[in-house]
Length: 186
Image (cartoon, rainbow, N blue to C red):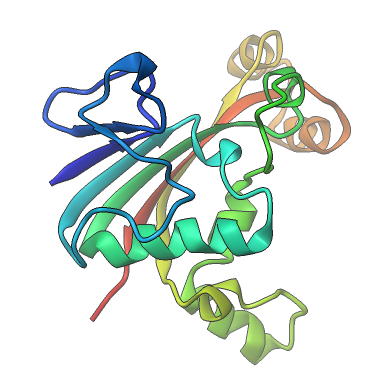
């Protein structure tokens, strides 16, 4: 089974399209913050969440419950694709329904391997994978740049180092983030 969670009007063929509202006529109406989700343990091969996760988990407890449910329903090695607006882009800042900034670095904290490495190195990173009881390896990540930064980078008028500095200093450099996670289960 493949789930398109928070589908809105962007339904995908071959997926069970799920949304919290019936206004977009999803296959299943379900509020993802209400757990447990209506799928069996280890029954899902793939989850897609496009511009959804930033709408969920205003509190840490609810956010963790969403991640735990993703982990619970997914089979070992299932893929989870998450696309979110960059938290320093106007698309994130202007939408009153956005309750959580999601970053690639933040998602990487839900990898048990990363947490174990940070603990061994004596780093101060919170071992979120262990606290939440999940394990997701990030197998792919992508940053979509906003214009004019995208063109400047592609033309070579802005170096990678300058771009990284701009991402830390300015809003509206990156438009959105994409992470593909692999579910790690024995």
